[in-house]
Amino acid sequence: MSEPTEARPRPLGKGRIEAFSDGVIAIIITIMVLELKTPDGFDLQALSRLWPTFSMYSLSFVYIGIYWNNHHHLLHAAHRVSGGVMWANLHLLFWLSLVPFTTRWMGESHFATWPMAIYGVSLFMPAIAYTILVRRLIAVNGRDGELGRAIRGDAKGYMSLAIYALGIALSFWQPLAGLACYIVVALVWLVPDRRIERG
Image (cartoon, rainbow, N blue to C red):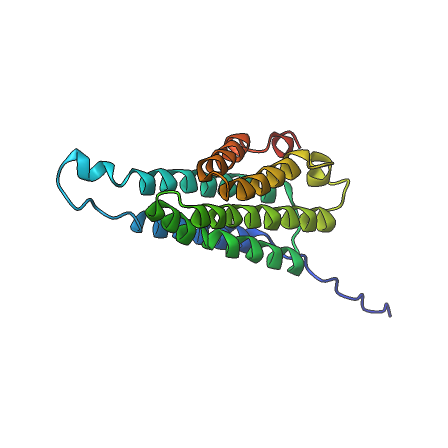
């Protein structure tokens, strides 16, 4: 009589992590658009007073879109997830969920120093969390896997972190210089990560 074989643990599927992340990101965007208030008057002058808030909404919308797009590419290239990956993903979503708050604060402050710096922190921390998520996924899927081959080094990611840090520092000297740094990073990441697409 043959001995019963020990059941191997089934790998965690990535479907739920993708669905949950998509739902949270959709809610984040919904919260941001609900923060947009109608003008106090009924002419273009009243509308023009809202341009700081709308411009910050637009920038933050682009940022959330960048994370959603690259998150999709990242999980598409990964074949396995783990408990550590799930927590790393929640860590990313936590920081992204704070973006609507910092967006509204900066828009209403008309680009004041502290709101600009805190907005930079709310962009810097998701970038850190995304880097951690990438490293966890590579650890689970192997450095020689599709994702590991695509991301050998992460010069683009580290450069972005440096520009965020510069933008936060510049916000205490000239807030608009800090904003310019944040826009530069958005432009760098506007196109989905080609390294993963090439796989």
